[in-house]
Length: 304
Image (cartoon, rainbow, N blue to C red; front, top):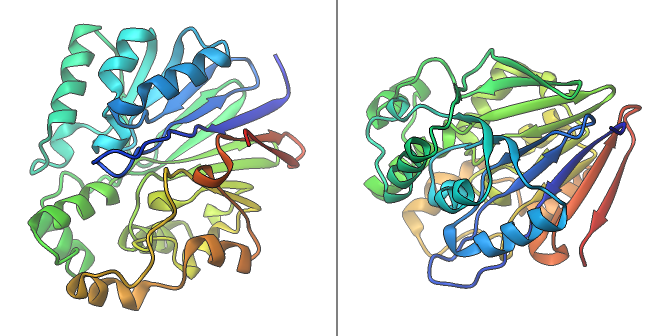
């Protein structure tokens, strides 16, 4: 038992052909229970496993799959083999009927193998762990969504690069978005939201998004993290989980650049500090632990 809400942004080093290692965020609640949000790709599981063992984690009280991309759930079969999981929270597969992947199939097989139980998350749900209130801000109840259906809902097209990027855009936009409140301290994590979903959240929640600590959307990429979003979240500290620096903008893809350019407000590692947030990147600083105190203060510890 302690009076601190700890958020561990775990470094997942990787330089292989996939290019990205993904997210793994360990949350330690004041009552000693834990929750892991995402688990990265399977190639980085040894690093995740070593980190959990170093923190004396022998079981996971809960696991949240923010959305079914390989860099967020790829290691789940290995994780569930190695650690008992109490509660599983995820997006129901039928929410995005056009999405299919090897990693999602492997996760579903692991869920059946270990007879895991949990809930499907959606906006309006409330959870409580260790005295911490958890509000589920999304995904939205207007799912399931097809790509055409979501474009009609947005009133604008998805990433026009190709069909794969359109589906990636949709899948990222229905990431689980959670806001945790511990006394005067708070934490926001919204997976890989693109600017399109950020706009919807801004319309619905406005300044209700404001928190002490936030995870940068989509690993700090140019697809996300607009000025309006940063202003509304108004986080004192922001962390981006990446195994490399966020890509520069513009890219070498003119059609994609033309789509994102009107919504691109600047390079996230520079933009967040310019707008008043302390910014950290796991690629540069290793695993990052942010300890949130009930009085609203916080400390940041880095592994290097």
